[in-house]
Image 1 (cartoon, helix red, strand yellow):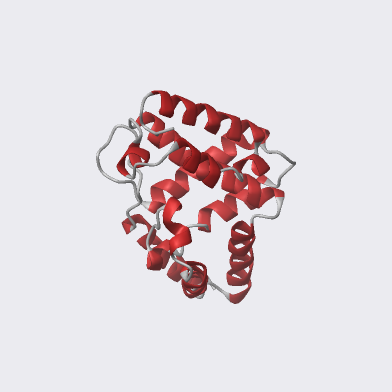
Image 2 (cartoon, rainbow, N blue to C red):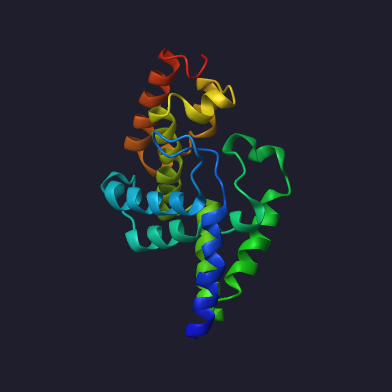
Length: 192
């Protein structure tokens, strides 16, 4: 059993090689998906009191620790372009199954169920996990003079519309996002 778990951890190490859209604060290089995963786990731990509903924090942490595993095979698809790839959900599911297949069957099934729960965004844990996952891009862009918003010439309306679901996980986080967007629009990082 431990050999299978080590095999999975070895395969998951590839998450460090996946370049994301955003840059770490103050740096020109792009962050990798492993850095992002660590940061959203930290954010969930710190911001848990702001969840819209009571949550099982360990369940949220487990979800966030694996939520980006399919990026090992599928890459990081820009949040605002995901709708342009109708095959993405199926490809990500297949990739997740392949990566989790390194684990003993009971762990693989548990983690796959958690990944699917995250993707479905129906439970309080999944809604909150999505809220903190989305927040990180806002923090990065706010501290990098607009970051990917400027690079992709996004509008304030696009950003708010694509992230309105955050309110389901945390009204406090969504209010913060609205403030960040308003500030970014004032600074010209997002067009009105």
